[in-house]
Length: 469
Image (cartoon, rainbow, N blue to C red; front, top):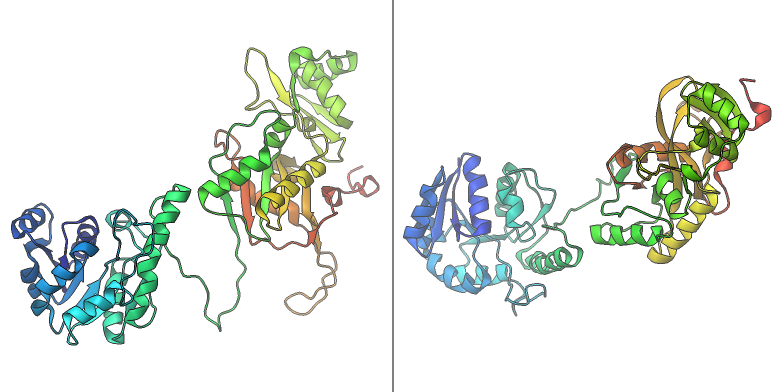
């Protein structure tokens, strides 16, 4: 067990840090200019002790400074004698209200260097925690952000990193104390990000891998939040671009934007009111066999090039685009109301829809990407539906790996991967099928061959290769 003093421990950051250290089993002294205030504060929190600034610093093996920059110099003077020979962790950020969103480093370079000069050569000053907000620390949970640790004494820096690791924080020693200038300036940048993109507690995460580590494939799939309920004529690409900007996670080159067929059909005006459909004799006959609304069956027949099977509850069709699926893709869920029922047809040309959306998103973001229009389709001899690509732009839907060697050097003879369907299926896991309201997902890290011409037709098995008839 190590004893700590949190100087300024009754403030938001100090209190959060004190709570985490006490929960980890350490003796924690909370120091305040008002000793009575510190004592009252500690009395309400198990594991904490309260005292004046110099008294708290004298009690501890490691001292953490968590005071505003306006009180920095005065506080350093008060604790100077009590911290000689100790490690002092300075979390100070030189913010001068009201311009806290503007970098304001002092003349010597940073607040941590000022602290080292004020405390003298026998105090090992280490800078840390400038990019971790008090709310994150106070949450008590895992923190999705890294801590930048700067210090001239490598042993002291590692002691601070060990303390941070015990609290569940990942940290990096970023060099000498003067490099604290980067972390202190970063706080103003994070404040600007929080304000501009309406997010809470932005942080820093260091990425990379050891130079000798093998490269492992990775994939991320995330739904796009904040999209509206779409109607005919809406700007789908504009809404997606705006939602991504508001979320603070812009598109990157190589991303695949997967969009549910339903919203594409809605904005393209493919909604049909059943009251306006007049079913013919054939539709009425088929409807009787399928136990379906004759008006719906009329639309199914109009959308299909062939009715392949009719059974109670379902009609298997070959859609006019070539896809084999139930009910020609016509959908009544989340469409219209019970008083005046409507259904939604597939886009007239899903590949064209994907190309238009891709062009608009590229123009809005400057990013080279691919677009897939997806729907949930059943599969022969399998129960359940899964996300499938019905339109695409910017990628080859198939990835032909024939001729490549396998793990043992043998030549692949029949490996042709339906990449577009695999990506659509991955996206469907976060897009949902019911009331989620997240009809767009971004898939990052998928391996595909970029192609500005290919369409989804490559995925469709030709009729002369139909293995079931």
